[in-house]
Length: 437
Image 1 (cartoon, rainbow, N blue to C red):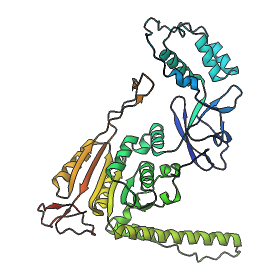
Image 2 (tube, rainbow, N blue to C red; image 1 turned 60 degrees about the horizontal axis):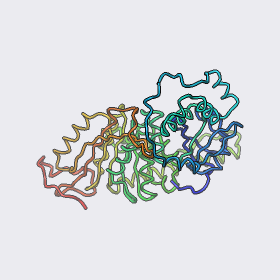
Image 3 (cartoon, one colour; image 1 turned 90 degrees about the vertical axis):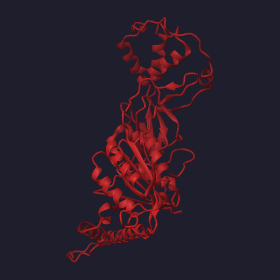
Image 4 (tube, one colour; image 1 turned 30 degrees about the horizontal axis):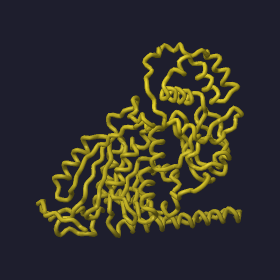
């Protein structure tokens, strides 16, 4: 992703986070006039284009969205030491003197900040609370009554969190800590060659392309289509996008099915023999452009396939959902046939049993070392002065997935440029392991 200095530019993406933590991605295209976030009023795109990433916008009493800056008084208040507690306060909801009807009337003629101030001033227990309790009270009321958004840069972590909250199934339940571990375990680096199955809306492909910084190749296989929402919304540069090479998994498989898929995928465009009675010059020019684009695409597909077959890959990464177990197995088989010695193989899945069985197979095989099956645990923390602690109320997923990783080794006499996957001596005897440097 090209790093943007200054205000948010037109034609880029931005992640909006409201006061309740809900996130949404927007594209600031030429036709975009305003952004709509939940129950909030429309946010004019001109206001967004005048501020940098990380800025906070708030809707004032005038109805205009304006940037809010953190004052020095607020930063000094964070350093105040607090003593005492709130155990003398009754929790019976009788401290607020304003009725719901009066609060609704205030919201109709005042800004959200003024409503929060009115609620605090009419609370019988607000003044007797500790400083921390007062801040917590104001924050809770602001989440309910203040329309405020934070403009975030579309990084891999922000997109991963956004997709995970919106639709967990569409990203295969892939959390950001699992995504970073996948990239780390696969040893993704600039200049490398990788075989990828990404069913997580293109998040893994985008993260790998960004890590490689425009140097190397990622051969992404698919079946029926490949969602690349994550690749587009990361705002990758053209050099980073050029790293990704897509091809159907069927063209890599042997047999009649693979040959037929390969023939259809690489088939050059056939010129049309039908000549219309009236030839429109504009329509003819457009038809020629489409024909040239198809021919260029066919040549690029052939070049990508030749590039994959010319040299083995440095890593195999498999990320599939619960309904893609068959696709995952076929992609893993095709990837291991093209994995070089010392190459890394990483598989992400949600079910323990198939990964544990595969782990046992790899450990018994002479062709893999450093076989590991891992499950990650992440807990979010509240980070505030003098009160940093884990969130007390959180949505805990008992199982968020497993990562199986290993390194491939070549046996004596194994070909370094073939597709046998290091099949040993051919007699079924475990041969001596050695690494290919």
